[in-house]
Length: 304
Image (cartoon, rainbow, N blue to C red; front, side, top):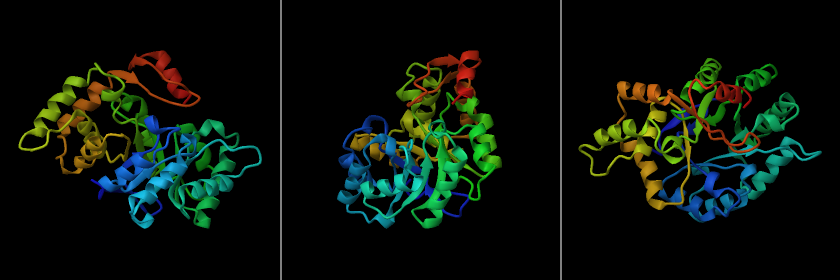
């Protein structure tokens, strides 16, 4: 699984599967988990200034014994302090991460930057200086992408968004826009249907597909792996995290599990689209579990 990568519009390649330092590791010492993940086989590490644990991520990378050149490192820009530049913030991240560059630098959230176009121009300068090899965004909706594309000399390579079957329908217009503009959609929260919305309509579908995929395999395929295969089939990189060593191996084993069928992919699309659940952290808060045609849910989504 670690060998699968996705081509970006700047000519580079991003490993499909990433180990993230957010969620349960946020604001905590993540050094042990990062080191264990790298030793298990992860090569893509995803972190952020907002997670307040970049220093421990850097420690974990050092403790793993794996050369920095063999890894792909992503971090994300938080809200800038008064007088601080994007370059200042990235230089501080590099010091905490104990590296001279990151492979991918993302604007974490659009709404915390008063002038997103000026912020993007500063991102471009960081790439030209070699402080990051690729630049992109996260949590951007179409209107935010349109705004920076009006001034971009270097277009964003990636938009990291919440993506799973319960937001598949809501995300369709955004993902189409990104495809039309050669921006890769990367997924966080991909396991939401089994991790945050237990008892949803996909439970039986995922269980049935997992059972079929487990046939003729010594290792049982899990519902979580089915969701990751669904993302893989759509060409969407997956960011995940865990402190459980066995779960790390489970995620990495996805590369040895056959694809779901076209019919199974369509069934996950269709059943997932019957409801709506978006899990968001930060200034937006957390949204509830809505029916897919709920007007309140749709209104809230347009403000993200």
